[in-house]
Image (cartoon, rainbow, N blue to C red; front, side, top):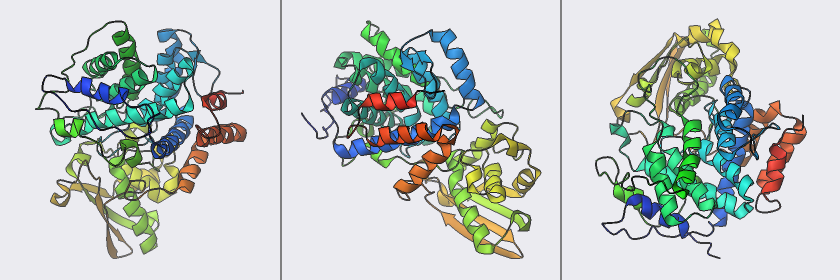
Length: 454
């Protein structure tokens, strides 16, 4: 069995990029052990985030509606006894994973692959009876294709970076590969998923919090449906990725590199948009350095990259989703209640006058220093005025980035904190099943651990 990474096949002029990506997947039998380890890390993080996300309004709504939309099936909804078709299960579980904005991400993609890829692959692997090796390899491949497609765009020229625009193609590639579809079927599934992706029409305009957000659950379901449609004979626009005005073909189809995209994932400690994490890190350091409590802070200025200013950034957000996209509010929340108040965010803090009052003393601006930093980085320069003193700090890489990674212990602590809504036994069983996946355990142990015993 081949355990090495393949180079992207040579691309004849007449061959469409979607077909090249599909052929790349089909030629890989199993990804290396190092990538499997990264997939396990990503799975554990996604499941912890989903455990907390299952308690949100969005999570409850998706669970309630999914049976009406897709009917009954055999794929489990995590942390429950509910069974749905794989597409319905993946939709609900993806909602859980994305609801709190705590899911992992990738700098090149400027988005969140795992919240789509992990639920889809686990749902399909359950129905298909896949091995642990196949399951983990599918996650790595889906992540790879999704990140390649997103990274091949010039993100500075597009209206929105919302994950729902591109993660469905990664789902199609992963689940087409996992179920043994032909190169042609995988290629058409990628194309169909891209052509029918969520529009995200309100992003960049709406200032109202909403639970559709980046459209990740919809794109997840769409990617799975694209595989079924392609397998049944539907044809997608195979040249969808070949527009040179939209996609850099070299970045999309570049050859063998030293690592898979999943090995460079970032992980989040704060339940908010990644664009605000550097500012939160910096503000917490300054407060400690100045020994300043919230009432001591006279003002706080945050300089960051221009795209961060396109967030709503409301200082008195009226919903958890609006708060997730407010850098001033999230910085103030961390300063008033500590960083754990963002793991995850509690809706009760929306009406906390101490938080909104401090948010009102926070200014946000862009600086030319960071004009070309995004999407490779999301830096911030923070200046705090407190007790008659000014202190400034620059944070180029917030905690959890590949350049500033979390330790295995920190990731484990994050999982335990977010899975506190589960019984201690269930949380322990999930962690053991993930950490042993493909080593001591097969997928059955994980699927069983994810089922509610209540």
